[in-house]
Amino acid sequence: MQKDLESKFLLDFEQNQNIVHKVCRIYTTNRDAHNDLFQEVVIQLWKNYSKFRGDSKFSTWMYRVALNTAISLYRKSTRSIKTQDIDNFTYKIKSSDYDGTEELQLKALYAAIHKLNDIDKALIFLYLEDKPYKEISETLGITQVNARVKMNRAKEKLKNILNP
Amino acid sequence: MDLETYKKTWENQPEETNSVSKIDIYKMAHSKSSSVVKWVFILGVIELSIGVCLNLFIPDSYIEAYNDLGLKKFINYSIILNYIIIILFLIIFYKNYKAVSSTENTKRLLNNILRVRRTVKYYVYYNLTGAFIFMVIIYTTVFSNEELFIKNFNPENLEVNINTLITSTIISLIVVIILVLFIIWLFYRVTYGILLGRLKKNYKELDSLEHLN
Image (cartoon, rainbow over all chains, first blue to last red; front, side):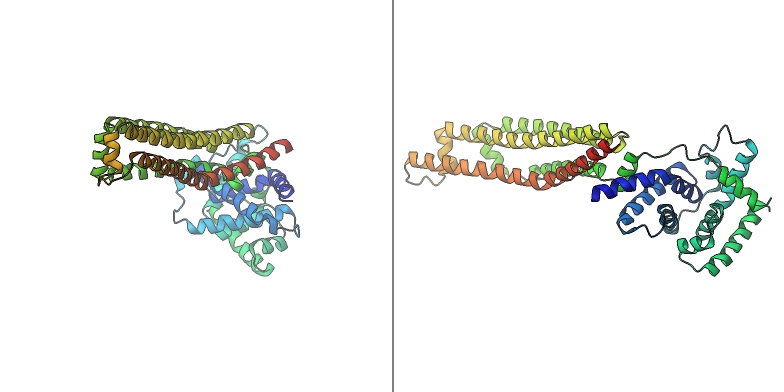
């Protein structure tokens, strides 16, 4: 039983790991921190996997656990993010079918997201991932109305950072 | 620029090139093997430090008794030799820990876990046989010299039959040797035994995972 659960978890996680990588990218600015957060998310997911009964999609549940882990870790750490870290922030976003302007835009987007607070980061991330408000409210444990209000504020902040 | 444009950019971003394999995910979720092997190393270090401390507090009368036996040199050399061997074991334990925590591939991790189990077993065998040989050498020296024997085992010079004394002493010494070895064995059984048991469980899990892939 345990064995089946474990292999299913590994398979599910392997297929959806990109979600966690993206969460790590918005909450951390260097490779080590990225890997630490990634591992922490894996631990949290596995610890709670037996409680996950498939009421929602695995990926939806993963968004929730990954963001909550990132937010609580972010709160614990007193270290503020240094701006020069962003220059080291390469994450191999170079790709042949990805042109230069888009690459610059993506860098600017990440740099702007890094300036947001932990909750706004989560909201913007879910917006960029094109999640409906119902899912956003469930993921963050707030009402849909509240999610809309907070989302509009977060978007406004992001716009101001992107277009000063 | 509109946020919708950024959203497109976001959607088009390439997938993480550094994707993590099942085995890595397993290791992260459990992060057990490497911490178990780390404890093997820490336990070895603690054991060595306690041994060194105990040696510093051996009463002088003991050392004098060994001096009478002409075993002072033997004792000193064997203590030094013992430390060298234990430090070598600790170096191997440390290397094992490094190897297990940095292994990327399941097959190699399985082999490394087996190697950890093997070195710990050798370590325990070494300690048990070392203690046995040490005790045997000391007691045979005592018995080979009647004068010394009486000095050590009948210091008050009571009226006893020398043969009865020898027989009873030999029997009680055998019991003591067995008891000491048993206590050492029990100590290792509890400490390293538990750690090795956990490693064995990890090994089995990893092994079934390997067949799965």
